[in-house]
Picture (cartoon, rainbow, N blue to C red):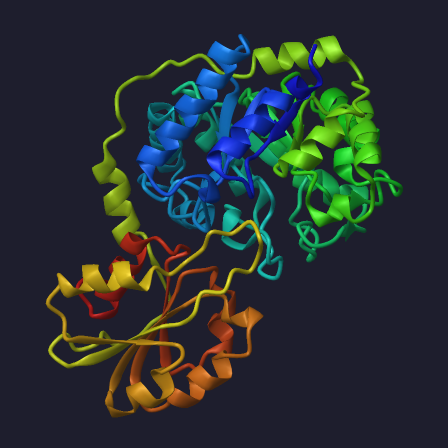
Length: 464
């Protein structure tokens, strides 16, 4: 068995032709695609076709699985499909049947593009201060996370697309970002057991794969982070009874790459029980592949070959359902008197700095401006650089921003919006509502998706 068979890698940092040459050396069984690999749908389809041609025609091996991190919300690798507003959005609506529909919608769209594997859903428990999770989580309630995670898995796998329960055994109990450093979860086993519940439900739902985190859980293994820990894989296999595929989170993340050599990473993760070692940086993936010592090569190969669930559905889930929920599914976190649609109003688009390297989050101000022009409202747009001077002549202001509790900017907002009729539209989690003045109305969309922001603006003006 070629060593690349136990690797998932990406094409980061390479032009298309160079990527194909490097792929030909490794021939990984699965390739994870990111936004940097294509600009639009046509480029994505062309890339998939070229890789399949390399595998079939030049190397005479089975096509690789094509994977993406298409979680929805602020992690969207395919922005040109009708994506999930966010897991927090779904958890707030708390309609598992709709969440199952969203999974089905995602599965249908991915399958149509030739994508086999979605590295979703996130089953971590939410914490408003964990910058890498935020609205990627369904809820701070493990029961709700379990219900919605299972629903999403049912929906997406019905279309023959493999789902991934992540980040086992739970990333929500730490504040550190494993993309940047190695976080340590020092909670006791009772707390960790609560975090395991959504994964237990996912196992019962026959989830196709489970992704192992790069967090060190000191109550389980005080020597190695989860992705390199035999103790963690033992819990997954023996305590949860999971027989599907186990994949590491990307091993180029600094939680691992800053603390271990490529040789150590390859040896430790493969010995511990990983079936697939993910490393999105292909040169590092090649080096890791040279040091694999698979715990059970035959069992891992069988799990890889049997990854994809049987396709049971072909009918397209109607897009109008997702469109309607996206527009109407926001939440008023602080009541307010509706703004006057006859009065000229300033709309401020605050800069949308990513909280984590995994995020694709963007406010997409140009797209929102275009949609708002269609409403006929009297709106003037400002960015965070010019809004303080620009909004002085306005009595009505709408501010669009996210997660101000992670910034100091809320102090400026409170000062500038004093004595004005104003509504803050949060595209993140509503953890910052208590920091904004009581005079400022607050609507949470849990999402940077244009439809959700449009709906919140319309709600600010009292249209529903």
